[in-house]
Structure formats: C-alpha cells, structure tokens
Length: 308
Ligand SMILES: [Zn+2]
Image: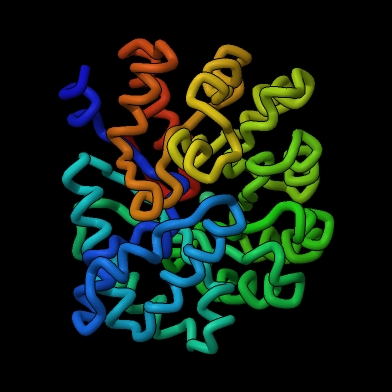
C-alpha cells in the first residue's frame, strides 16, 4: 500500500505557498539566523497562534528571488511525491500588507514554476479578517492575471473575524473576470459557514469538514458536485478536530460529498501529500480503489487543465 500511494499520480488543490516554506529554506534565505531560531517560528498552540506563525514566516519572504527559491524547493518536494498538478494558494493579501509589489513576485514564482515537471496554477487568496477593501485589491490582482496562471480567487484566514457575507461583491467581481471561486469554510466554524460560502458562489470548499454535521448540506455538495479540499493533518494540528478518530472524512465520503486530499501547509504541519493518503488508508479504512478515486478527484476538481 505504501509504495502504491507514493507512486500514484497525485494533485494538490489546497496548498498555501507561505505554509510550504520549510525552515531550511528560510535558512537558505537568511543564513545569519540560526536554523533552530527559524524552526521556532513554526511552534504555536492554537488556531490563532497558527495564523500568527503563518504571518511570521510570510514576513521573511522579501524579494521576488526569495519567492522564486521557495517555489523551486516546494516543487522539488512535490515532484518527489509524484504530484503532477498543483494549485498553489498565494496570499496576495499578505504581500500587500507587507507593502510589497505583487507583480514582480508573481512573475518570479510563475517563472520558477515553469521549469518544473509539476503543472502549476495559482489561486490568489485574500485574508478574511483583513476586510473587504483588501480582498477587492486581491481580486483585482487575480483578475489581471486570469488566464496567465491564475485560475481562481479565494478567501482564507479567520471565519469568525471575517464573515463570508462581507465578500459578496468581491466574489461577484472575480466571477465576472472569469475566475473560479473557492473559500475556506467549515474549518473552525460550523455548517452555516459552508452554506455562506456556497451563497458566495464557491465551487470548491477549503476544508468544509463541518458539513458532516448537516445531512442537507452534504446532499447539496453531492448534487452540485462541489468538492471539499480535505486536509487531515492540518485539522489535527490546528486543533479544529480533537483527535484522528473525530475526523469526519469517512462520514463525508460515505455521504457522497466529493472529497479531495491535500496538505494545506506542509512545512508548518510536518506533513506530505503521500502521508495524507497513508493516514486515510490506515485510520479511515479507505481501500486502494477508493484512494485511487480520491486521487483522481484531485484532477477532476482542478480549476486548471489537469489530467490523471
Ligand atoms: Zn488552507
């Protein structure tokens, strides 16, 4: 089973660029800071602590060359797991917040990705709690690059501090620009947050695990063919799921909700995509055929051109 999972062609649909920066890569960027100190950035106690850690790592990426190096290191790791297609979420909102120019950074990551065997598309992500104005700026950056590597616009961050309703106009704008839509929802909040993301027009949901509490919602996801971007380790580490046994992936799958498997923030959570499939096999009783089906979903629900 282990070899089969490593060799199986895989797609990543929920992978944050800033959450995929290994401490070793930060050290390559800044050899003057001891590696141990850099590793300390990745320690936190709860979901808000995680969001702060995510910001602290992002802050250390300063130039387009920094972003290019991170892209190359990330894609090397994906290639080694036979990931053939990846949609990488770039927190354009954080780039703006740092006062950096987005254009040169995007060109740098795009160029760095062009040399990889992994086919890469980009999702520009706004931070919910940064508010609507910032989100509209991110949507505009995404719209300008629609068809030039950017396939979608999304929102992430704190569901509590940035309710979906704020972003109705922003999502409508992104849709008119030809972008696909996704939203983190039902991660740290309940099913109502997923319903709100559906009202925004999201055609995939980041996490969405709270849908397991709502049979009507699971039916809607199945009927409208809206996939959940499931990230098991992430949910455990951020504490939104208390234990592996509590993770609802099996219930969601059995209810027919379309499922994909992803890593979210592999550097921050110490996980790999192959490892997520192993968890699914070991703890949730997925058979080889089921796991192959889930891997195929990674290509089927891709926003860009992907084939299994
Ligand atoms: Zn995420």
